[in-house]
Image 1 (cartoon, rainbow, N blue to C red):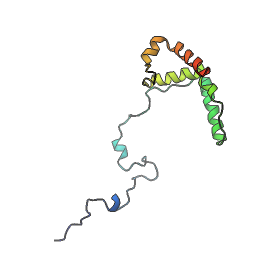
Image 2 (tube, helix red, strand yellow):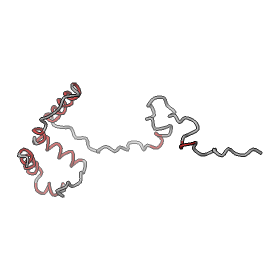
Image 3 (cartoon, rainbow, N blue to C red):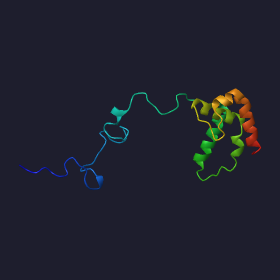
Image 4 (cartoon, rainbow, N blue to C red):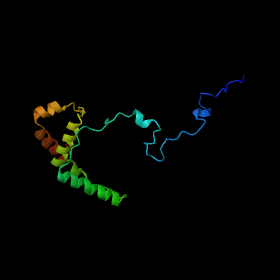
Length: 135
């Protein structure tokens, strides 16, 4: 009777496998996570927000313009973006995204319930004015 190999059922030196571990499908067809990856994923489960908000046309145009400039000229520095931050349409869209994502209260402790009770349009207008005045 032969002695069983001491390494049988154990990882090799430095925790390495004795043979290569390769996904069963070539390339990234199986997600590159290993042959059993798709078995472990529940159908339809996603970490993304349930609601996808489509930005208003002006916000989308700004996004596309900035994206195109950044891609066409990688070394370009965007020095003057602050004036875009306090635009009411940008702030209103950002608020809608955070609201849809059920964002948590910030450092000021304001919740969405507080803001809704105060009036979100009034709140966004005041925020824009504070940002514009850099206060």
